[in-house]
Length: 464
Image (cartoon, rainbow, N blue to C red; front, side):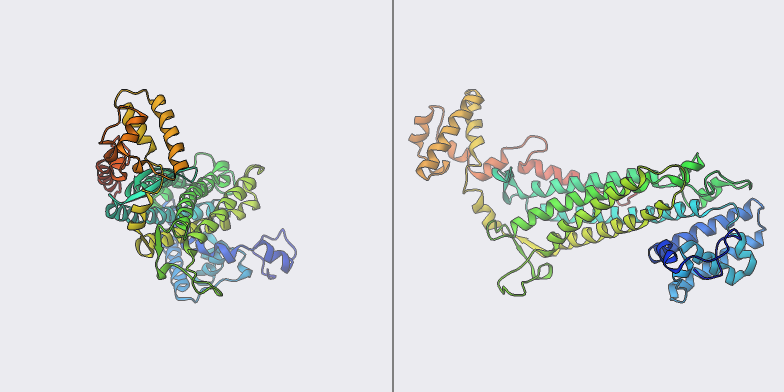
């Protein structure tokens, strides 16, 4: 800070340069400049609307704020460390443009309610952006699913072969995760979109302001009913980072699967050159960097959530400087989720190809049709638990003999139980195993077709 201090005459000297650097947030909260200008214009209009300032003064302030925005876009307004934060930077430039009138803008406003307003305006826009990205991610999943309704795919539990699936059914599971993500963001957005402007430092103001007027200008749904709560609340930021963390969980789970599918051991997908990298020493390698990075970046969003919770847990009312730490956590969470959604959407759209022949072979190499043998017997009157135990013995015998269930002859089946007939082979064929699971929400092809149609209808044209 220079000798031209931003503080009152209570202070006799400027900050120590190292403390000024430590205290400053301009290097990251400059991201709020657009929203600081929007909030400040609404505040200036309200001051004129209530007669605290004249109409002409309000107009001059709005025009000067617009000028600052133009200067920033053109690159001629570049506040440095001496500004401390984006709010002081704007006020200082405003005074340079309109003189002492610029000093009136802060009437009936504190940085406490100002920064809270800016942050909410910023996050409101970013939630819309992320929700739109989630919708694009969903559309890509649906496009892939429509191509693979009858592509057979090994289903797993405990990472052990369980039952064959429609690949489309597997992809639709991630569609529904993303749908819940969008619903969570929509819910968070309701609590983001409440205005703290006019709460002052902590106790409101003596001026006859109209908080509903500024809320309406800024398209907020309402205003904080308690000024202490308004300036100290960061629940909305914690909620957002929590929702962002769950988005990252879903992206990370899909990433882990893609990493496995691309391995030589699975060989379920081929990574295209546009979304894979090589090794600096092993020329044969093609690495799944996109899903690996997404999986890795998930931890940083989790870390921001933990940091926010720890920061807030011991803060007395009302505003404390600790709250400056919410910005980097919030900004980085937004940027990380945005980047990961973009990368994963590109990867799914154009960066990988399912190896359908390999998948068709995979579902014939195991005992994932064993449950269907038990179901076959149960449908013919054999108690399911008795059928279950019988099939378990059959599997054990097959493993010892190096056979699969499809390799048993009809006489061998009949020796196991007289209820078996020639139609057992059709019943345990992978295609029929999948088709037969036609319960609501199941992997049967007809169910998947209906699920795809319903999924398309669930994606609205607009978001939060």
